[in-house]
Length: 139
Image (cartoon, rainbow, N blue to C red):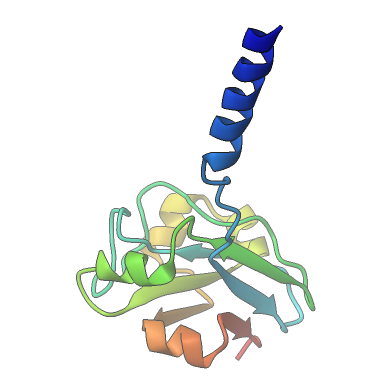
């Protein structure tokens, strides 16, 4: 019985001494203040093209739809400062697309004709100054 209690105490101390699972979310909010549904793509360090190359990737990688007056977010999985240190420059590109355009045209057409509603080339300071919220107004 003493062995079982000792074993339980040891197991409990091991379990409680381990670091808890990281639950921090490093997010950028994308707020849609336009009158149409949008989708976005963020060009991260591991992507095919990163700023200063503002080409769209050869494989379609866009978010789910964001309806008008709705805010969605993108989570980096790690601190954005770490992400920015991996970039070849101090900017990261965020592309906004009309969701209807993505439904109407195949990705190759979107890429080659650069059917982007708006592109934001953002520094870390830009995002901090914007309180981590990119607001698309349709202009």
